[in-house]
Image 1 (cartoon, rainbow, N blue to C red):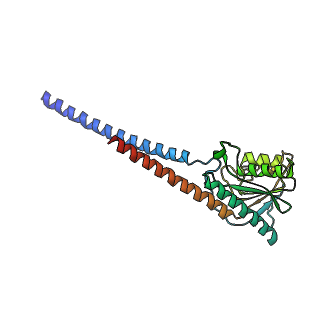
Image 2 (cartoon, rainbow, N blue to C red):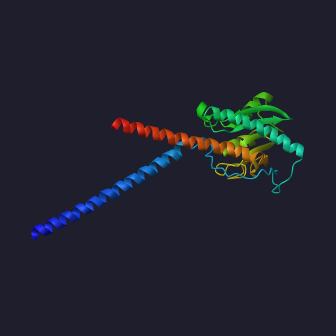
Image 3 (spheres, helix red, strand yellow):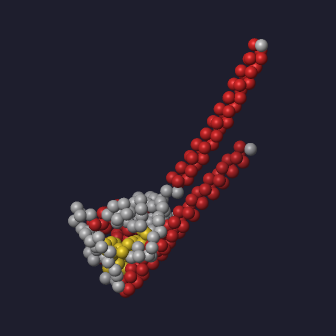
Length: 245
């Protein structure tokens, strides 16, 4: 009788231990999956923008300092804004070719291009090397003045807080951007540093110029990057499994 009870107890413990091991393996697998997904998210995090952009219509809006009402443009003004935004998009392509987040910017004064730039923070190991900053630096050098009075900056994505502060210091008259940035935008999306009442200069804002084209360029870039990272992880895993065999 004692032997039977002992065997029964032993079988019960073995069964419980097996269930515990299986649960531990499932938990371990789930933690590993979550860890891999977190690594993927971190590795795909851009130097400036994460690509989580919501597409919106092509309605071009203007917001002058201390004015909430949207105003309309003449067809000639709209075409001019589109012309320079298309140029900014070609600059964004240059950034993408070297593996940077595709954002391009240019500065126009009296109808003439005086400066341009595109993202190079990874290439230059410089966190400040955003398209806007490079374009303004080139423009200031061109006109030999650190103030860009009456100049307009065109950029494919809403400026971040760093670039917005720099634009205020440069006394840029107008900023025209394409896609909004819901996470770091400092021209109205997250905050509005370009028109902050406590600052000594406010900038006219024009948004939505070729918005879909600008947003698609970023979304496509990050979609491609995520696929590349996923493929690289899979190849690495297969290689590790092959070595262990």
